Amino acid sequence: MILYPAIDIRGGKAVRLVQGDYERETAFDSDPLDAARRWVEQGAEALHVVDLDGARDGSPANLDHLRRICDAVEVPVQAGGGLRSGEAVAEALGAGAAAVVLGTAALADPALVEALAAEHHERLVVSADARSGRVAVSGWEQDTKIAPEQVVSDLAERGVRRFVFTPVEVDGTLAGPGLDQVRSVAGAAGEAGAELIYSGGIGSIDDLSSLASLGLSALAGVIVGRALYEGRFTVAEGRAALG
Image (cartoon, rainbow, N blue to C red; front, side, top):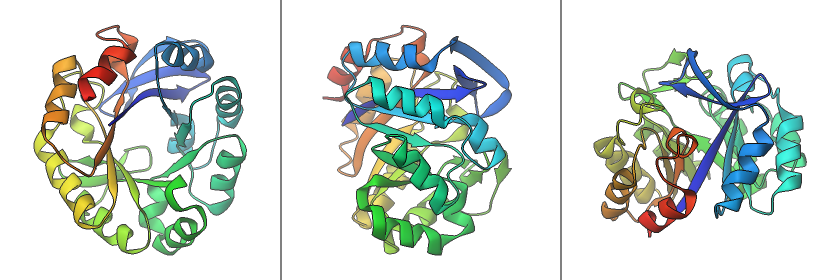
C-alpha cells in the first residue's frame, strides 16, 4: 500500500479540517509547497493535494499552487477539488497532476465520468466520501441518499478503476479509521475489479497497521493528514506500518 501525505489547500495555505467542516480549520503551513517538500524529504512516494476552495466553489481555485508543487517534487501528485468538467480535469493534468480526483461531478454527470475514464484510464480517480453511510458532495456540505458501495459499483461499470473513500465522521479527528466501512467499500471495489485508497481518522501507527492487517486486496493506499502535520509519526514510519 502507498502512503499519501495530504496537502489540503485553502486560502493559499496548507490546512486541515475536522469532519469536513470549513469552520473547524487548522492552518499548518503558510505555503503548501513547504509541506510537499517536507513529506517528500521524509520519503513520500506520492502526494494527495486537495483544493478546498475549489471543492466548495465548484471550480479549481489553486492551480498555481498545484503547479508549483508538481514542478518542485519528483513524486506523482494526485489532485482533486472543484474538478467538475472535462476542462477542469485538463487544467489539473496540465498543471502536472499525475492523477485527478472527481467528486461531485461523478454523481451529477456519470456520462462525463465514463468519457473521462475512457480518455485518462488510471489517471482518473473518483471520490466516494460518505457521512452516515451516504455519499456527501460539494465539499462534503451536501448529503445524498446514495451509498458509497453503489457509487463504486456503478462507476466501475463505466470504466473507473480507482476510488478514494473517506468516512466524513472520522476525517481530521485522529480517532481511528472506519474499519467496517472500509471493508465494505473495498469489497465493492474488489468485486468490480477496481482499487481503493482510504482516507480519514488516521491518528497513529497502530491505525495504519490495523488497515494493513485487514488483508484487503483492493486497498491500494492510505491518505494521512493531521497525524503527519502533528508529528505523531513520520512518513517513513507510516510506510513501514503499511508494509
